[in-house]
Amino acid sequence: MASQALPYRPHNHQACVSQALADARAICREQNARLTPTRERVLELIWQSHKPLGAYDVLAELTAEGQNAAPPTVYRALDFLQQHGLVHRIASLNAFIGCAHAGEHHTGMFLICRNCGNVLELTAPGVSGAIEGAAQAENFRAEDVTLEIAGLCPRCQSEAPHD
Amino acid sequence: MASQALPYRPHNHQACVSQALADARAICREQNARLTPTRERVLELIWQSHKPLGAYDVLAELTAEGQNAAPPTVYRALDFLQQHGLVHRIASLNAFIGCAHAGEHHTGMFLICRNCGNVLELTAPGVSGAIEGAAQAENFRAEDVTLEIAGLCPRCQSEAPHD
DNA sequence: CTGGAAATGTTATAATGTATCAAACTTTCC
DNA sequence: GGAAAGTTTGATACATTATAACATTTCCAG
Ligand SMILES: [Zn+2]
Ligand SMILES: [Zn+2]
Ligand SMILES: [Zn+2]
Ligand SMILES: [Zn+2]
Image (tube, rainbow over all chains, first blue to last red):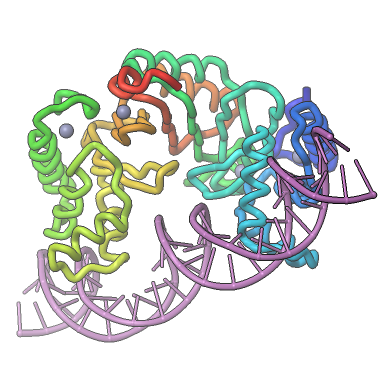
């Protein structure tokens, strides 16, 4: 539903946030899940940019706001959000990012710019299909795919072409 | 070169180890890199099975052998081995595994059995191509691909089919 | 030899993630 | 409404993974 917006370039990011929160509320209502204030606030913090945020970064922001938060506070909220498909964990960065396709059944593929830190989440059916095929060729039953691609986004390629 | 052996099934694993060590020696000689005793021993420990090993598991084995080892000892050796393409880090597990295609230019794709813990490293040109294509379609310059697939290996599917 | 580079030893600490149990809050059902 | 059951949060402590910093040793070229 959300028109795919382009993390790398300037855009009306508040729209990303509003959309994500609206989607989250709808999804939780639909799934009878409780999007409590802390969970919602954590989701909002995760969405404050298109750069993945570490759990302890979230924690720092919560405590700065005067919330009575400890590590489990954050990890519980993140677990909840992951289980409902609202955030993804980027294993190669130990960090979290808002899901750009919440509600849609998808396997994420992440393009991570090593220069600016922004992450674009893609759904590439061709890639998913190829992966499924390769797994099946080995008689392996794939359940969970981690696909993270580090490199340079278009913007950072032109800014720093000498490498 | 190494004929791809099948982590999931019983096999002469000592052959895997010998092959890996021989390859490592050859590669290091060729690259003028020093495969010191500690580095070689760490590689051997990593290869003790087809299950990824945590850095602190390696450390425990080293100290059990009476070696004077601390975390940096292990992480340095692992860094060296990674840089020379002899081991891979599995980001989703925070663990390390011997490279099954040392010397060959490749992007690893890992099939990780969540039941038995064994990992099969594949080279799937179709997958790599699809990923490259998807990245290029976004004008993203891919440099490093993390592709880890968790699921059930053939053996564990038949043993525990009820899920 | 010997001087510089590479590797290792050593200590301390940072960063990330969990276990556990008690307290508070919600929902359900009567 | 009110008690029981389930869910969420608070709070403390701890486990696991990884790195910083600096001293010492080893290796190798010249
Ligand atoms: Zn945005
Ligand atoms: Zn960038
Ligand atoms: Zn083997
Ligand atoms: Zn298995």
